[in-house]
Amino acid sequence: MNKLRRRSLSGWRDAVLFLTGLALIVHEAVIRTGPERPTFLLLFGGMVGLPAFLRADDKRAAQPSEPPEATT
Image (cartoon, rainbow, N blue to C red):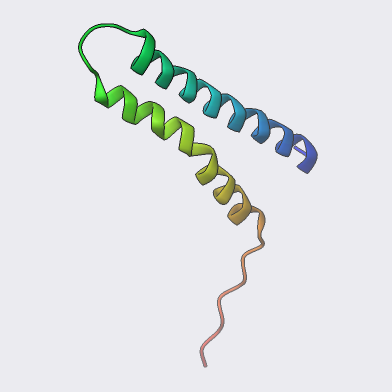
């Protein structure tokens, strides 16, 4: 998979995760009636923050790793 296509897919992935998490937070906190479910709010908050961690992981994976130094 070429680099441009990978960036495009990761951009879509990040947007979908962020917007879905945000929409579910609004649904859970504002629209839904009934008992509170804080576990779901934590899960959806994690979805909103996940793209930042995935971007950092993508950058780290793209960097070539250095071979270990030989000890003599």
